[in-house]
Length: 83
Image 1 (cartoon, rainbow, N blue to C red):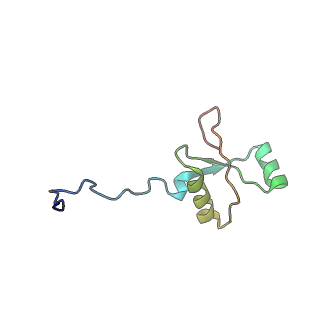
Image 2 (image 1 turned 135 degrees about the vertical axis):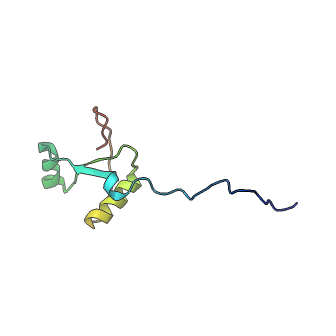
Image 3 (image 1 turned 90 degrees about the vertical axis):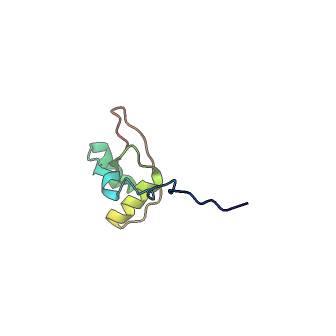
């Protein structure tokens, strides 16, 4: 069998990361219940991009705040934002 010799590459450019750490983490949530979680459970609460998965959120927190993340819990709020 002869090797393929395409006229042009099928993928024009390598895929780039569309979400950097500043787009993944939008802002910290500062409600009363979020402040209680920070004090009692040592837990940070952020509003994040809806397209971000848990691995991207974990990497963004590590890059921006230089802290180890034990685990990431996500939920989509009724207003459509991801927390």
